Image 1 (cartoon, one colour):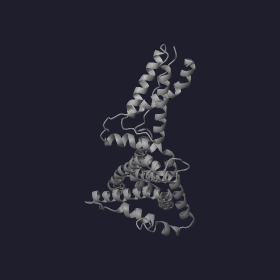
Image 2 (tube, helix red, strand yellow; image 1 turned 135 degrees about the horizontal axis):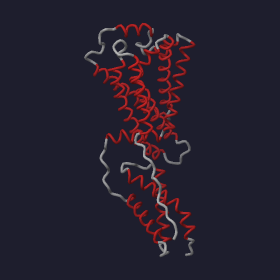
Image 3 (cartoon, rainbow, N blue to C red; image 1 turned 180 degrees about the vertical axis):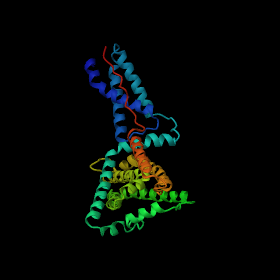
Image 4 (cartoon, rainbow, N blue to C red; image 1 turned 90 degrees about the vertical axis):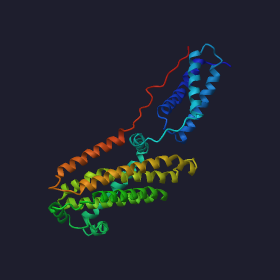
Length: 340
């Protein structure tokens, strides 16, 4: 067999480097799982490297290239046929690494979920601004929000008794349970090809927009921010992430031209759906705690500036957590080989 070694190495090197990069990632993180597309690519690269090793083995002078390929093929073979025990579940690693990485992997679906929610906010705000009577229709089911904002603020600020004395833990548990149920419902409605999830996101946005504008028009913006921000900066994103999971499920059911069978599409996202909704549940535990122990207390008990400032800090921390936590840089650079 006549083989131009220099041309052969230059042509195949990019495939070797890609295989090496995938191996590096697997060896750095034993809990990492490839999706179906990555598995197919990994196996194809392994077979290609094996065939290249067979070709280069006939050239005794190419020791460097041959040894590199032998090592690469051996590593790939070990990953394919590995029998290592699965690592034990590590809650902290899961929450601080796997959850934010899963969130970022489907970031486009999150933006869609956010856009639907924002559309609902705009609709709810416009409905209140153009027709005050719409308030009874939109906010009617929530009796504690449908009254006059000014009167509510006056009552809240004049109250000298602790309305939640002795039952803060019970109240926070109710909030956590209810909000988690809503989040699971948003995810489950993804079974309607995502339509149900989108409707719930839009409806939540409508309520938020109507309530927010109602208080703003009444001149109670400071109260609104002090009331919502301590828990809302975590609670609202939690619902949007639950919508992200629901829309992801809907997208898998639709397929969008994918040739992968439905069962394969659902299997590919099942782990991500579990990760997203469990991460949301943990976020809602924090939100429920903040709402019961802080959001319900207003001036003069707790200054609004303190509550707004704390809410701003929470929002920054949440953004940093979701965008940077668990970030894995790729390999610093795959090894390069050259023909002698």
